[in-house]
Image (cartoon, rainbow, N blue to C red):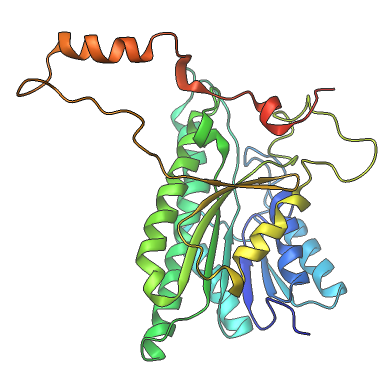
Length: 313
């Protein structure tokens, strides 16, 4: 019996550690040949010298298990290096079928204290990094479809967003903005590429990694069994979205963690008010909106501990 991703090739960015590593291993387990990308900087803020070690280690691990893998250590936020990454997969495996965008950094600060560089660097790695690889993968799939007389191709994009975009994160205005931008990029790409057979979806993972060690520091690991916040809970959904069974899933946002997948609805209108005049006046808006929002907490955020179903240690 063939594996679901047999004969397909994939690129996974930020795959030297954490979520990206788990996703690369899962795609390989499902039969895909994988290009493992990681810039290899030791600091989660993007600091430190780049290193081939993380990407090479994951690629070697895949090959040791009988899979096919190559390492790539370029910076996906660099337009030229992102092109080289996509070209490597095409050259090595004949084509590219799957793109998983995961690379990112953190430079947390309250909005009133954030520097220009802290803003720019996070937007660059997350949002521009997602765009760069998407741009070259999309061009490849479009050309393949044209060469096949307009036939649809197998093309899958799985992007990494975050609930920091959905629920807010006071100390991460740069990260939250980048992750919101990734959702916009995903839905736009989904519409643009659907006619070629390509899908683009985004996941909001909750996982205990180097990036989130502070966020989940208070949530205890279980004494037995798999940690509910282990990246291995996220990887199966990514593998599924990359495969043929998910051909009808496009432009979607899914939250995933600990054996749970939630499909996020697009924003809906909760309540609508119509002016009784030609246009609204200040007093009319005051009479309508002030009572509506009275007593409602700012942002209506949810309690993370309650949603996660975890206990703090």
